Amino acid sequence: MSAAQQQSVRPEPPTERWVAIRHGEISLQLHVWEWSGAERPFVLLHGLASNATTWLAVGNELAAQGHRVIAVDQRGHGRSDKPESGYDFITVTDDLHLLLQEMLIEAPVIAGQSWGGNVALAYGARYPNAVQRLVFVDGGFLDLQARPDMTWERVAVELRPPPLTGMPRAALAARIQSMHPDWPAAGVEATLNNFETLPDGTVRPWLTLERHMAILHAMWEQRPPALYPLLACPVTIIVAEDAGNPEWMAIKRGQVAAAQQGLAQVRVHWLPNTAHDIHVHRPVTLATLMLDEWQEG
Image 1 (cartoon, rainbow, N blue to C red):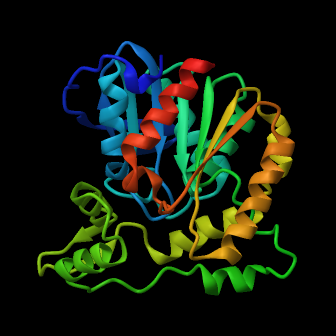
Image 2 (image 1 turned 45 degrees about the vertical axis):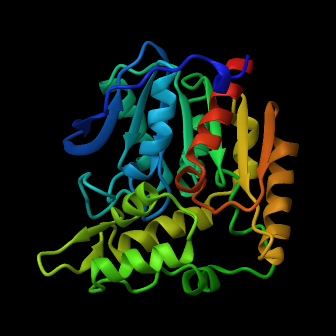
């Protein structure tokens, strides 16, 4: 029986928490949303310049099946602390490991979207016995050096975030809705939470440009194919298909194929006509796939 066919219960709303972790003498407060549950814990990692509330709809679906669920604002994002440094994969995965220890979470399913998928990959490679399953949600396989014509200088220009500081929040909401007319209203609101709303009604990203570019450079340096053999757990890859962007889809298919070749235990699901933010666009579909994969082992 699939997870979608099981009897679900209405979960309690998630609890908002700040969890203190410590790197030696340095303390960091990480903001999390937590759903209680007795079944296998799920840990949800957002993408670059995103935030934990983008996972709320998925978290509700997982919690309805009795799972404990944690969605975290990674350092520099959302309502978590924003240190000047530490945006490399070693430090970010240390953050995650310390958070799981502090919250007494053992052998979770870790799902990451976009950059969050690459964080999940790095975590699984460093701590191969600490994870029950990894779920890469349109990420994890992202290899910025895979294209022979790509350079860091080109990445720094093409993937630099747009200057949205000072835009009225209402105008940004309209822009998101225009770009994604079939997104649920809750998903648009969650995406708006990527930004701090200032007293004058305008926004600015929680993640500063300098830290954004530091993470992007860490992604440039990371080579996922070198990490695939280090994973000990099964991996599920869930990929968004965009028929309107055939050039990018060709690149993505090549990167997913490299992951399939390099991973010992992997299953891939392609979702047609789906946005990169799968967890925002199709949260029920995503949660159902995650639950079914976990059940099948």
